[in-house]
Image (cartoon, rainbow, N blue to C red; front, side, top):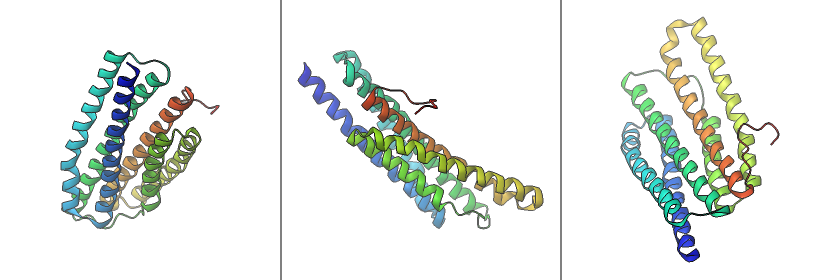
Length: 219
């Protein structure tokens, strides 16, 4: 029986890593499409979001099947629960990548002038946090996962700066609001992507240490 559950869990891990790779690729491509105003790439990202949705459902079904057939305990149970949660967060990050692609189409179709904010730092942090949280999962590295949680503070700071900038700009120059609104959406999507990467890191800590650190000020 243990051999069967070990095989099922190893398959689950491979499938989750495949979904993580697809999600990270979607996020990176959506940022590149935005930076270059690549409409065709943006449309491809939106279309490919369906692939993520399908894999997310398949992974959830696999998790539920393991719970029903093998009734895992201890670390195996924590692993399946963590995969269920990470699976959901990856799907949401892919949705945000699709949203970023839609902003690319909006900016291009409405001929909006250059957005007055450079998102490279924020986008780079969000991508590295996603990659880092997945690496922490692969390596069972709770320390690296906790570092991802700390990095989220930098993304939050950049997001607040973007909102403050847009608020002042719209007050002083209402005629430029059309340039500010897409900027606010983009900043929000990147901030949420970083939040979901943080969720994944928190789930890694739960998997490795059996500790729930979400909403905890002491960790």
